[in-house]
Length: 354
Image (cartoon, rainbow, N blue to C red; front, side, top):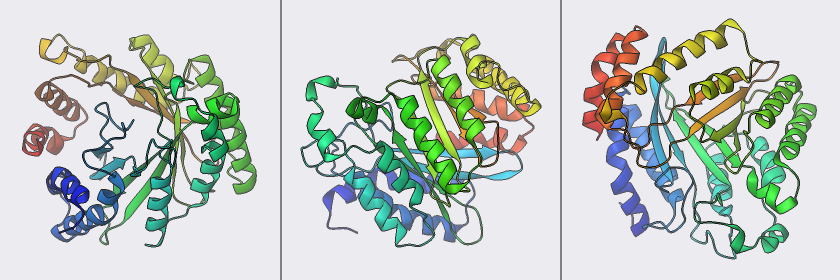
C-alpha cells in the first residue's frame, strides 16, 4: 500500500497486467513476486503525476510505459518494461525537457548495485540540454506532437535462478541539435568515436556505416534516438534508431540491408523472415487493414564492440490493427519457425492478458 495517490493509481493500472505477463511467460512464482516488487518500488514511482500531464513519446497514446515479451529461438521468453521517467515539474521552467526524473531513477537504481552509469553520464553530457540551452528554446518551435522528451529507460526481467534486471537507456538526439545548431549526425559521430577512444570499443567501422546509411536513407529526423546497456562501456551494445513513414516493401529491404551494405548470410536469412512476417501481416484480411493513424516503420542498428558490421532489427507497424488478427498472424508466424508451443498458446495468452 502507499500513501502516494499517484503511485497507487499507476499501480492499479499496470500491476495486474504485468502480473499476468510474468505468469503466461512462465516465470516461477518467487520470481514473479520479486519482479512485481521491483516494479512497485522503482518503476511506478518514476511514472510521475496521475493523471499524467507530460505527453510521453514512449507510446502512440502518450502513455509513459510499455510492456512487451521478447521471444527467442532456444531461449525462454523474457518480459520487458520500457518507461519514460517523468518529473512532477516536467514541462515547466524547472525541468523544461523532463530530464530530472531520469537522473533520480538512475541514481536510485545504482544503489541496488550492478548498474554501470558511465555510459549514461557520457550520453547525458553529449545530448542532454543544459540550463543555458533551455533558456534559448522557444516554446513556439514545438508543435503538439514534437519530441520534447530526452530519455527513456528499459528493463528486461532475466530468467536465471536469482532474479536479475538488465537496464537499458535511450536518448533522443533532435533537441541537442536544435539547441546547439550542430547536425545530429555530427553530434552522434563525435560522441561514439570519443567512446571508441576512451573505452577501446573497436567499433568505428560499424559506427561509420550506420551514420553513412542513416544520412543516405533519411534516417536522421526528429525521432532519431540511440540506446545503450547500463554495463561496462567496452562491452555495451549501442543501438541507433530510425523512424520513417515509408512503408514500401522496397524501403523495408533497403533499411534491413543498409542500402545493400549488409550482405552476410545471417542478414539475408533475417530478411527472408522479415518478408515472411510482412506478407502475413499485409494479407488480404480486411480486419488487418484498418490503421487509425498513419503507421510508421521503425528500426535500429546494433553496434557491438569489436564488430565491423552493425546488426539490423525492424519494428513492423501494428497501429490500429485488430488485436485478434495480429495475434493469429503471429501464431502462424511462430508455427512457421517451428515454435510449436508459442504458436499453440499465443492467441489464448493474448486474450487472457487483455
